[in-house]
Length: 150
Image (tube, rainbow, N blue to C red; front, side, top):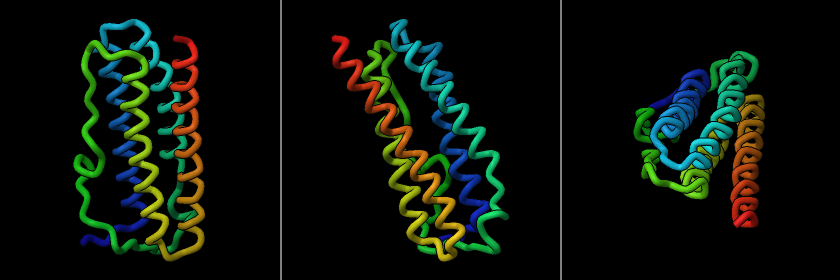
């Protein structure tokens, strides 16, 4: 077990969210299906906005020396499942892969909120969880729309 400061946790979250942004970059070049590439492009624009929001958070506003216990030592590359998708993936495959990753992030954000001690820190993670749930809802809506379009 490692003890993290709130600032360290926010930096880890940004790394995990940047992995998703990099995944979108790769998909735009890698995917064969034009609709799948367009799906990746739309999702990446949304992700860029999410990263801007995360990078704009000042942890000093939410905690004074908040240290988080009960969190395993998570190297940034090992916390989330590896993002991988075949080149011939459909837009639905792209959306499902991203949805799985986003749901894993939401579960981890919830775990982090549960181990925080200070109300202001919990408030920050409540906002992050709500934001993540909104992203998940948007992806599910895209999946539903995709199914209706077929």
